[in-house]
Image 1 (cartoon, rainbow over the protein chains, first blue to last red):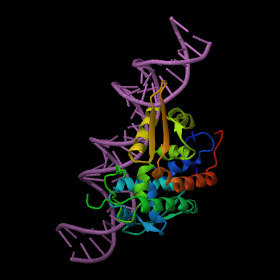
Image 2 (image 1 turned 60 degrees about the vertical axis):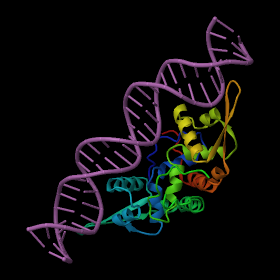
Image 3 (image 1 turned 90 degrees about the vertical axis):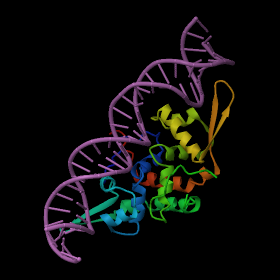
Image 4 (image 1 turned 180 degrees about the vertical axis):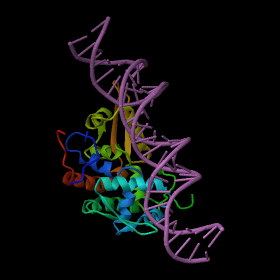
Length: 115
Length: 115
DNA sequence: GTATAGAGTACACAAAAGGATACCGTGAAT
DNA sequence: ATTCACGGTATCCTTTTGTGTACTCTATAC
């Protein structure tokens, strides 16, 4: 079972929100998971969707998601290299959370197009 | 209408997840909103629930949530001072997101009690 | 006369997150 | 002969997050 990187759930007992937040924390993780809901993707495919993420950050976030047991990383020994990423069952179980966020975003964020 | 502090939605169009994440980002904001779902609360009441947050951080997070139009801050001119925090309608509209997180947390996080 | 609660602010500092840029190896295409 | 795609590392830098301590002001309680 995947170990939670979390040191301590320091919210009083009955605060599971904090734990989830730790998993999808930061600017990127939630978005990565959101895109992976569509299916398996390669490194640069993900990168193209998150237009402004740097390579370094993407690598880092993917490794953390992997460490938390939310995604799976598959390396093919070919050249040029190929690495696939997909959700684990645990990762996919976050779908309701991600989709709730998407719905909210769709309804409440007016994309201030040309500012 | 509350202005989003967000500079730019740099995920390709159709990625509302990023916007939401920006609002409840970090270790604290989601948890604060979660507790405020129960009703209006005073500063130290919130603080007692997030046992490990420092006063400085709590102040900062609350101010940001206020700036994003998710919570409302009401100051009473009494002594000792009294300041109430409650969700705005916009803040309350995040309820499905927060509750989805809570449900996931309840199901998937085994609180490793005494480690 | 001293302490306490309440909701902060001010300052110094350490740690973590995030960003910019350059580099790697190799097979295939130009 | 050079360039490109791929999936990264390495190094340096800035910004954000988080910790710790001290301080404020005043009515009330001890």
